[in-house]
Length: 99
Image 1 (cartoon, rainbow, N blue to C red):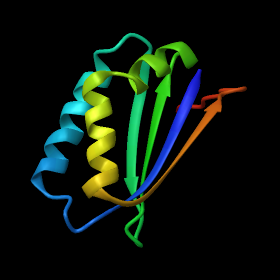
Image 2: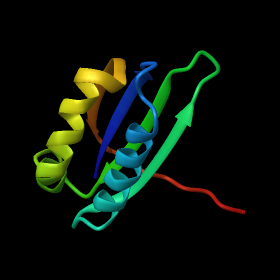
Image 3: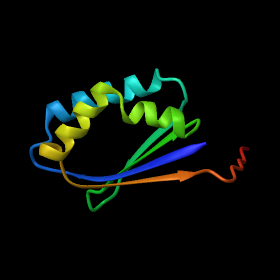
């Protein structure tokens, strides 16, 4: 399994069009083969962190190159984000506990 850690800060220009595209991207990703899970958090200082889990690097690459996702990436760089950082990691161990 692979996790993509997407850390970002939104610009003042990120309004309704950002929210609409984010919702579309999540719905699209969820329908793609290899998608496992998505979680998103916002810190007190405004940084946003999204965790996206994929079955493997191949399915993650299909998502990365999806035509509509490419448009979202371009819009992110041109108007929605003041900064972002993407980290990709292999999950080497996964342990759960539930009561």
